[in-house]
Image (cartoon, rainbow, N blue to C red; front, top):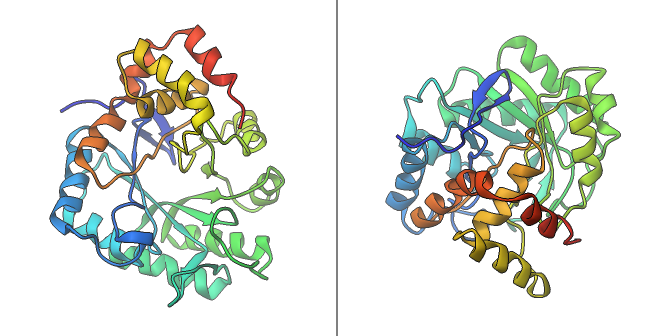
Length: 290
């Protein structure tokens, strides 16, 4: 078995490799319905774990329910080393929109749905999705009420640890006054550093930062620098973009997703590329602004 990262990190009290796997791309187009090739999706999940992935990121609203059913069917009974993180606070309607759903009853229903669909007695890590890409309108539920509901479910034993997603730095003190924050997920990558302030706040508080969309979009005017660095390292641009994140700070954990077995193995190779990246390479990449 291949280890995806030479330096495991701590997440929700567990030791995990720094390169994990996100399941958002496993359902059908628009993160809706089943995949075109279910066996291929199952195979990607099994290959990820076979190659040392110990951190999966999912949500019951991927599909909806499709991603969690795939995880269950591919990997149950789960290895003791596998941490599965999920998210709540969002629902999908018949138009396939992404809508906030963070009222106490909604969150409790979502947690129980994740438990059932993943076939678990307790969820390792649950993120409250507060805002961010694709969410329409604004949930009227006060943040403290939503977070407090999840904290009660930790006390009841349904959840192990809590995280936050799509936040601004001000959410952290408000959350920690009620319950510890085990991790934060915000959009952040080589070409989109709009959450730099959140990353900095997590670094200061020693909270793991798990960027979603870690590959981002390669803008044409910047692609030449990325390609030049990749060519010098005999790596792909995607590997270099992920390696930049790994070298940015040891508290960053990655969850790149794909439904392609070849892309999966390419992404898992980012840890090795990070080890070969020079300070000059990092400086050139860091100089790119969003």
